[in-house]
Length: 123
Image (cartoon, rainbow, N blue to C red):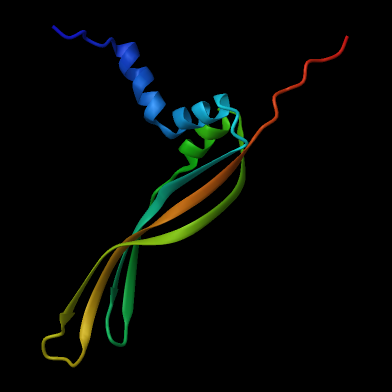
């Protein structure tokens, strides 16, 4: 028979898989930098021959970034990239040309620098 995991063990494993858990592990290994890519917002864009529309679905990574900083890191740099996740094209019935639907998301790429450990005070 297999051993059943306690709730505390399950929570510890979930933390290890989280970004904050990965940041803690990197800090313990002595890494000087920690970089993550976090989805910031889903974006859907439908482009027509002469017009376009876009819809942004809000997302927030602030809680995750704060949890990483709590593990001994300082946010050094952030940038955003568009990641296309799909595209479909079709002939427009009754019009000339094509329509294209593009799906994707905006990801934040965050670079953290290790905070120096506090130095013990000299007596």
